[in-house]
Image (cartoon, rainbow, N blue to C red; front, side, top):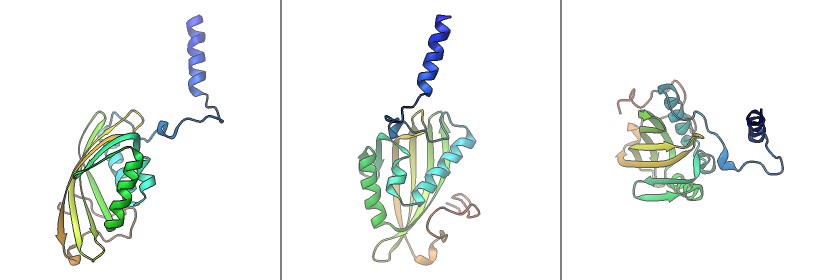
Amino acid sequence: MNNQNNRILELKTEAFIDPLNPPAPNSARRPPLPPFTLETAIQKVRLAEDGCNSCDPQKVALAYTPDSRWRNRSEFANGRQEIVAFLTRKWARELDYRLIKELWAFADDRIAVRFAYEWHDDSGNWFRSYGNENWEFDENGLMRLRFACINDLPIKESDRKYHWPLGRRPDNHPGFSELGF
């Protein structure tokens, strides 16, 4: 009986949230959670794409652990504050940003994606940036590691493939593979 009472107390304690001392923001859960299935990995990729297409660094950073580590091209970011600073610089430079991501592989708490995004600089020069990312998630579905390799291809504005209004890619817009990337 004592073990049962202790377990009930543990469950009550786990379920109790003190309104004067709520859990830290880093304890938030971001479903879908690992281990991933094909369906949940595809969902996670689309959620990441949607977040990036918002071009809101604060919002995007909440999908990462507070101590998340990034490598993006030759730049390294550690923690949410540096991620916000990085994304703020990125989207100030990469104008009219539109992104499509596609699942490449997954296992347990890891997902690999390939992607392409289109953008122009402040001189009106257009680019399509192609890349691959490797992600690792914690048990709450927050990304703790992100490694990205990216190459920029100058394109003519007439060669653009992404024409939806800024923000989330419409569900009926062709995906990465459907566009032949």
